[in-house]
Every structure is written in structure tokens, then in C-alpha cells.
Length: 133
Image 1 (tube, rainbow, N blue to C red):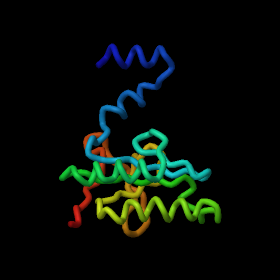
Image 2: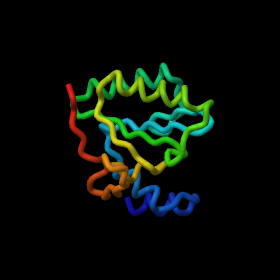
Image 3: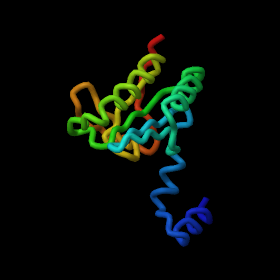
Image 4: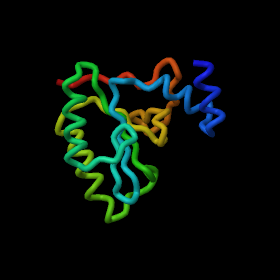
């Protein structure tokens, strides 16, 4: 691992990136929605239909969950972005998958019911979420 971190540092990747990868929860699908309407699932661009497939796969996992981030989430969305946000959230909610809201693009926090951001620790890469079935 030390050699990998050294190689990544030489290639211009930060050591923090290498460390972060080690702490990703494999049961968590990370969904990001950007101001321009782009949708990503685990860092890869997806269509709404592809997101639905990824969510179905996550739901089939007994420990599957979703982390959701929206760029500019601290402000009202633009009229153009609102239909995309509604569709993405509807796609997630239709599947009754546990969801964690994040205010950070790297998914390193969890937003609680009061709207407070709580950082996640490296040994706990995803927030505890209840599965509602």
C-alpha cells in the first residue's frame, strides 16, 4: 500500500485520494446531481434509466444504501434543474432504499434531520441508515 501511495503521489494524485478510496463503503451507491443536470453514480455519468438500474442493484443487496449529494444544495435549485432533481429523488424514493444526504461532493459527511452536517470518520465510511422494508 505504501508503494501505491508513493506512485500516486508522483503521478500527481494526492495521498488523501488514495486514503479516501480505502474507506469507501462497497454497499453504498453514491449519487451526485450537478447544477447543469448531470447525474453520476459512483463517480460515473449515468442517465436516469441507468440510475434506476444501479438503484435496483443496490436494493437487491441486504446492506445496500444510497448517499445523495446535490451541487448547490444549500440554495434553491434553478427552474431548469428542478425537474431533474425531482426525477432523481423520485427514482430513489420509489425503491425505498436507505438514503444519506451529504453536503460535500466527496460524500464525507451526513446531514441529520436538523440539517446539520456531521463529518464521517475514516473507520465509518457511511452513516448508519435504517432499512425500511
